[in-house]
Amino acid sequence: MAFCKNFLWGGATAANQVEGGWQEGGKGASAADMLSSGSHTTPRQITAETDPALYYPNRTASDFYHHHAEDIALMGEMGFKAYRMSIAWSRIFPTGEEERPNEEGLRFYDNVFDELHAQGIEPIVTLSHYEMPLHLVNKYNGWASREVIALFERYARAVIRHYRGKVRYWLTFNEINCGTLPLGNYMSLGIRNPGTRDFLRQVDNVPLRYQALHHQLVASAYAVLAGHEEDPDAKIGNMIAMMPVYPLTCNPKDQLKAQQNWRQFNWYCADVQCRGEYPYYAPAFWRQNGIELEITEEDRRTLKAGTVDFYSLSYYQTNCVTVDPDAAQASGNLLGGAKNPYLQTSDWGWQIDPDGLRFTLNQIASRYDLPIIVVENGLGAYDKLEEDGTVKDPYRIDYLREHIKAMKQAVEEDGVPLFGYTMWGCIDLVSASTGEMAKRYGFIYVDADDQGGGTFKRYKKDSFDWYKKVIASNGENLA
Ligand code: BG6
Image 1 (tube, helix red, strand yellow):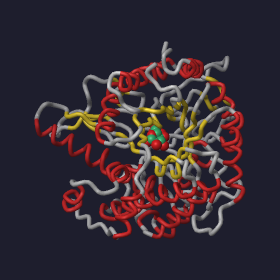
Image 2 (image 1 turned 60 degrees about the vertical axis):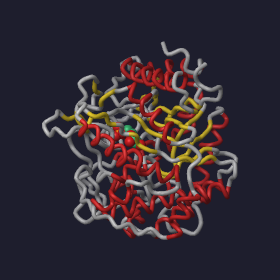
Image 3 (image 1 turned 90 degrees about the vertical axis):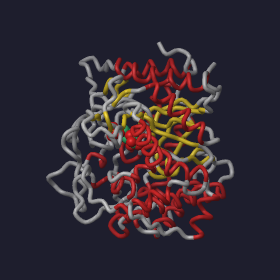
């Protein structure tokens, strides 16, 4: 068998995109609760106050808050070995500044973890997946302030201590390298600069953003250290949005541009989290971009000591880069690029590239000596619920099959140390980039629309039974 015996097959979600119940159980508002719905063509709005003319999809999401027992039973039926999920920080510390955690919030996740273990499913828990208490956005401009580091450490310590024995795998920040992009200001760093409203055109202060990202990297290292203190058995990983690029042509200038792009987006954060210090190219990058980071001696010591135990990534698509300004463009997860003539695209224009996953896993394995897990991969598509309650999604099966084949080759033929795969959005949820429910990823269909309507009933898609067979055969039966 290509995959190891205990390979962690499963699915992934994030609290803000799946839970709903935004004001229940003592939860405070989070940054994600202030993001309006949008679409492929209309950007989401970032609002400081609730605008009654707008709809806020993350507040209801897929209503996992009230459906978790049913949802976890369905995951159990598929044979999941792992479920990657996140804790909403504002469920545990509603403003982020309380001295003690909210007991009701802790209990909610206790129930979720107990239900998972009853099904033999291992939780893999992200401490912060694109949300933070709204209060911290309002008071500190999010991660722009150093104060937030200690608040995050308190939160990380509290949950790792409380769930000791129930959670063995933790991830610090979802797609931490999103902070290298202007898009990451609000979603990833909680920065809402004056004048920001349009999700796709946020007011950007580059030096401030990189300082905020530095604070997040330090906080990630503190979480690793605190986590190991609280639970020596805990394995704590990073999480990087892999956005691989190929040079569009063999023009050496395209090659150089691609190399620079890899450093800037794919390696910048991971190098710090895996090796414990900023890489050789960082000071030059800072100089060229007017960035003067405040890095204390204690920051350096913490980064050095708080390196991660494993490497996790999301992978959806690839792009090309070129120095040719006239090259045709494609869109993608967080970032677009030049169009690749060899690839097909999804309904949302993301280029589908299974071989790119094999290539990417090898890139990671050859750079860091760490076990690797793919914690996001999947296809956002329009699905149709038929009269008889079925959903025919062969396109999703095709996408997943080809990516699993590519992982298999990476393991079997190349020797990549891969220990799990959690497909993104195993149950339909709110899209992070567009705020739509219509962009569906799941094996499980949720009857909810883009205006907050629907029964929220769950239905199995065709891919549900297919994935069940994949897991039962440990990735051997992909038919
Ligand atoms: C990743 C995020 O970037 O991609 C998820 O970690 C997100 O939160 C996923 O949902 C898919 O992107 P989208 O925009 O289709 O939801």
